[in-house]
Length: 165
Image (cartoon, rainbow, N blue to C red; front, side, top):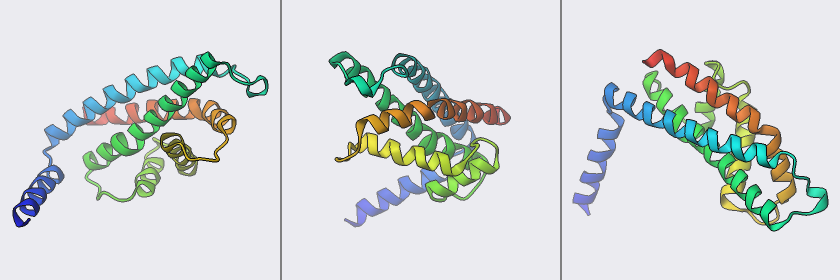
């Protein structure tokens, strides 16, 4: 057991003390992931923004909508859990909570509204964990309404990251 903890803490401290060149490589990889995820989300958004819950959903519409919400949740997760965390590390800031990270991103001009991104993150968690009792139509409506903002945050983060190159 002692050996496990020594190995764990060695790996943990190594990851904390990641060199700036490794952080830049991680940033580059993360930016590629978010750009790819944003492209897929944009495609799904265009396909789904006109689907009305009032008429019920066909099987094909359900397939498209489920892909859309999954892509929405994925981009949100990549931004909040990976991209903003990497930016925080490159800016030599002490890692904090997700709320701290999002608030800092708002101060940097990456996020127009920290509260709105936190709300998007909450809905994304609902999508990812498929909590019972949540209205599918309400989730779709929220995701459709907030996709342009999420894509904009991705673009703002990408723009902010130019200072690291």
